[in-house]
Length: 155
Image 1 (cartoon, rainbow, N blue to C red):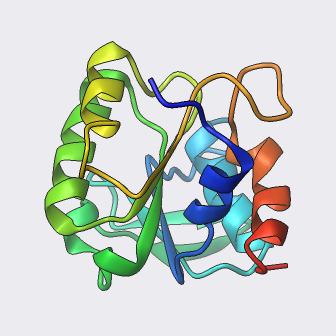
Image 2 (cartoon, rainbow, N blue to C red):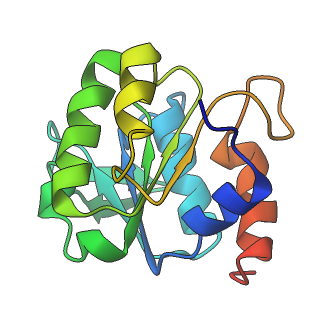
């Protein structure tokens, strides 16, 4: 499988828009933390949660969309995924058909089947996942995102 590099993470942040699959109002959940991270950096981010019409971060409500196919500009949106691998595979199938250019698979969101699909030729321009980055659990937007944004000229 292809190794993830700083260039892969930089490519993820070259998109003008972002989305978080698994965004949540629960501050204990990683989906909440990742969505809040994008908001902290003032990036244009859309929370994706099929079970809720809004998510709340620091007392403010943000409207959600139910899936990646409902994003306003999918071909210009990089997507962070925070779901169980059994759900991630379906998210990636939708993302590929919608033309999503890049995905960031947070630790715990993928298995061999997910990676086989995500890394297949022509699936995505960039897939950030697995070992590497600066954290102990592998590539994580909360740990590695700031440097990748700087490298992409977003900070």
